[in-house]
Length: 308
Image (cartoon, rainbow, N blue to C red; front, side, top):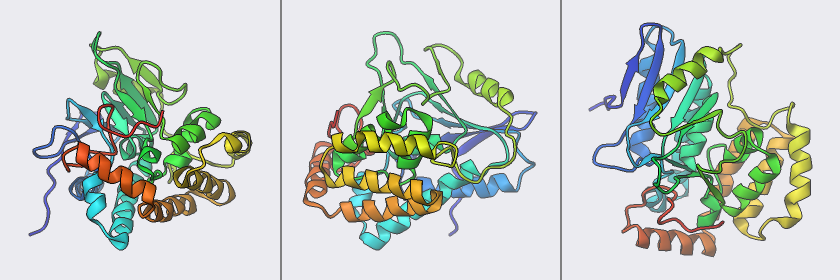
């Protein structure tokens, strides 16, 4: 029986469409095969509707925006299956960046690994602070903490949004940030707890009409290539001497020398290979043991290997 679209969406009278990410029977959203298939179904549905004037990406989970990839599912895949999974995700995310209207992600809780990569495929990012007294939630690319590297463009997008030296160091070391101290440039706005995130997203869309229709997200390009190359040269000798850090550097180098599709292809190749290293095998098994085998994301502040 063909799969049916189960993700909820809304449309304003003037054409701004909101997609709510959710997963049945999960309180923490992770990127698994089901959710990636749902993203494709949604964008197929959206293409058959009147053109949207804006796109807002939100999460229905109270505990996460998206906590990352499903590590348990990744651990069960063979190499060809993992490559296919990463490719499926890349194609789903690309449908966000190819929209002909402005797009914005509202990040109200943890956004790690693939969750942040999905958000960064939007034009804008808006974050919301937690209630007073609540521990700040985390954001970043922690894959190196599991002996892996980003697989959906993180090595290309993060240096284009924040200080490139800080971005490369963070990706190579698996460092994440609390929302109380995010790197400058990552979010277009951080709104306080209690503010209306939907209203903030609509304000962003109306203030940032898209000019043209870019086919890739904000990433390494001719306009920032020289600055990112200088940053890579400056931090190279300070990075950890680990297979994961070497993979991040290689992916950045591919992005500098070639272009987006070659770079994310390199990320996929490198991630599949890293999965077999003793370091990754040990850390993935330890992570699954701590999470009870659920593999709920690339990690969160309570369970993931800390690389800070």
